[in-house]
Length: 210
Image 1 (tube, rainbow, N blue to C red):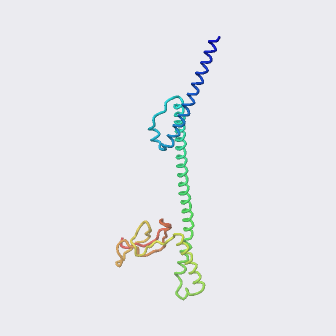
Image 2: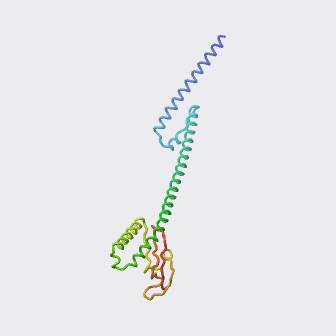
Image 3: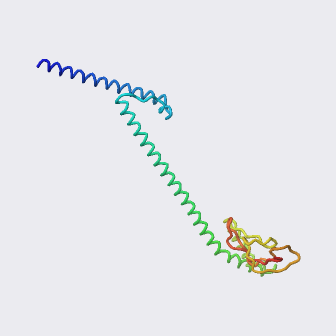
């Protein structure tokens, strides 16, 4: 009975010794990890450090590996989400710009016949008739309209005296003229217009010496 109690006491003492040693090892590992974190901020330096020995060091390393994996996964997820959002923003801005451009072109196309009517009407007036209050008022309205269109980015296409260009001119008549060079626009029947860098309406012209 006495021997059993002695063995039990020895076992308890050994258990306490093991627990104390384990606690000391954990404290040492914690202190060393803190020192390494302060001294080595870069990942390469941390990878170059010697692996910790012992049970608690192994557990700590496994926890650190899991933490790094989680950080990498979250970082990758953030990058992919940000890239998707950026693509969505660019696509939305492009679609809005296209819709705005399309709407502006529709309005301009509706306004061009009105401008044509002003020009044809004013072209039939003589110098004396132009001085009349009504004709002078119509001329001012016409100039105000063309100025507003110019501010919107609408500009007339140069035609008469220029070399024929199918990108801007629509040849509806051909002829010969010794005073002009080859493939030159001699007359303009309907004025063409540009909206920024695109053609809204081609000029209807006569081309000579083709």
